Length: 298
Ligand SMILES: NC(=O)c1ccc[n+]([C@@H]2O[C@H](COP(=O)([O-])OP(=O)(O)OC[C@H]3O[C@@H](n4cnc5c(N)ncnc54)[C@H](OP(=O)(O)O)[C@@H]3O)[C@@H](O)[C@H]2O)c1
Image (cartoon, rainbow, N blue to C red; front, side, top):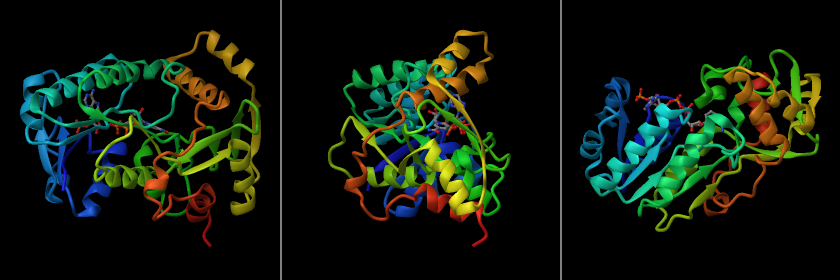
């Protein structure tokens, strides 16, 4: 049994991790939140309400906790300061293990909004705590919006956002870079299961790589046709075009979108699994299974 705290566990990837930890029925689970989280409290989760501007308050909330998992959005100065305070609070409270809010790929140097992740990662490495960062690629759930079966499950942690690059509802697909470039895609519910299983490991690797599936965007377009009978209208966008677009004046959201496409095109979302072999069962859902489950009625 591990005493574990998930910061930001009320929504997003944090909630999928909370659900997976609860399902193990093994661990003592706390959610660190800025509000009461009554629904999680009614499921037996301890709730600690905090103000991220107070390291003292964070340290109080984390006393007696072994592992802290940060799932707060890492999108700017505000959240970087909150995560650094969480890390400092964890140190003062005597926490032993810390997971920063990465949940993506090695593209922090390409994506402006991820600059804070690198600052936190450097601080984590110098903290003296044991740590791992979870690299899971693109969430497969980005292809859930508008699906025809079990949409809530299909979207998982990706709730409230538009489809990314491949929009099955609109029938369109963007293929960034060379059409053979592979990317890793992982369902957030599978990420949650791996993270929950990792709690039991006696030693953590500095990086935990989770691979749900590894395929090119062009292969996803092929599967949409083969599995769901959807003929998507494809637009290819090459690295040079992406770089040219990014050299122009874009608003923040557009810049974020094209920087993610550039990361995929440059192979930054393609990596080997390190963590999967440690937990072979059950294996994560493939893209083909995901499309069949959520985009067909078979
Ligand atoms: N790989 C992918 O495809 C992908 C896609 C999306 C996101 N991500 C990554 O996943 C991570 C989490 O994102 P998410 O979308 O799951 O998060 P989210 O749902 O937007 O937020 C999670 C929780 O963080 C807390 N929070 C929000 N703003 C905060 C602030 N300013 N200070 C402190 N806490 C705050 C909130 O909890 P309380 O209100 O309870 O405090 C919120 O419920 C990020 O690192 C993001 O980059 C990856």
